[in-house]
Image (cartoon, rainbow over all chains, first blue to last red; front, side, top):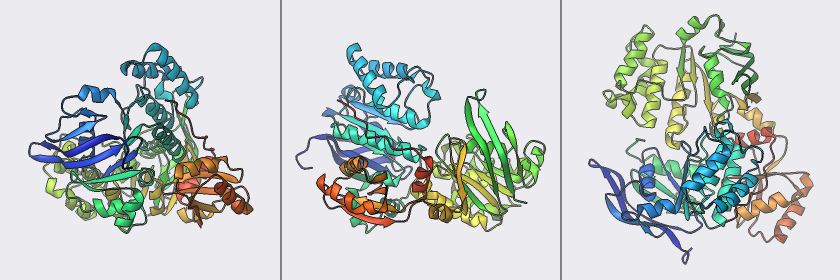
Length: 249
Length: 313
């Protein structure tokens, strides 16, 4: 892991709102092609931290570079080099599969030729042939989420941020979704993912645990389990999060 | 008679295009903690809305403590508590005001049934003057439960009370349900989290509007048709690919730090290990294990996992 390319680097990154410290001096590196799990209880500061890393919120203090770009001065370049999907918003329900792919491909500046190649490849991979003209709203949730992920990486970003991508998805589709994640990581895309499913924490190369705005643990799942003398990541989470003082969204 | 009874209930939307609930029958005994376990879109919310008389079924009959959900809806509404999946309290009323409102609507007072909510309410009482919209997820959930309980219902319907709630708050919430059960309240609760299934007395596993299995969690696990093994090796994603290439494997699914597998034939264990060795998997470890509810759910879904998709760069 030592000589791998660093794609996310933060140093004492902090965000304050009216005297409330939402994110308190977090420092960590994420490497190219790594699946990096970002865990924490509700209100731990995960969403605020993620917004800063995506260039959507300017930090109060500290430094960070995302895909080599400065988090204060180069937020537009950051946005071009990352992908994002969440459980809540991902695709336009009242556009068809094809229209969504075209829309996001266009937003990310793909040429018509490239877009055509990507579109065919994506429809083929996801088994969506003959479904291209269906409204996204009519697809089952699992298909929507798989399509949303593929669209979020259509421009081959350096990093993709996934905010609870598998919430409420059935157990078989949830695993197919992780197959997509593995494949993208193997292709060199860095995966930054939050989840409430502790078994999914095991699929990450490394996991951080945020508690009350701070990073309380950061290591591989097996080392974390060792460190907290726990048998599962669920136990590690419970051990760390139950000491939390605050609870907010 | 059981407190909740459904017989051949069906409900479809969009002129029959979407079958949300497909011929569902089950019953919940008095004082039972019964779980509806299934992913989003399985039909859980439609069932709740039919039972709480907010939605008419297309066909079938259902009753709540003997009252028909269509004819006797008024009687049912008096005696059930319902916590919908979407936060449905008044965001611009305070904690106290919301609770007061629900007590008044049911012609009672907070004081009259305070015993029932005391333990839960005490946790949010420091914020009693805060507007409900400004509460954290965990606190909203506790307030919603208090509001659903304030008229001392006979049956409590909880639609995904723990969705989006972190693991610690989820554990706390199930602790509260257990204690409510001791008060004799019948509870029907739904969840997409398979690990919560074992906290119910009986469960129904539901998918695409159909019930796949109804029993106690222990019996459902006992009915798992095959021996199940947990396997790990030095490179887990490679191992999974190799398992899927193997002719000896019937099913293989990632499960946290292990993959769970079943064999086509029990005698296939040795040949599999040889095969994995040929494919250069190191430190292979395999143990027979007891299935989880999630293993059972996957088995019941009868879907085969597709091969790993490729994304070209």
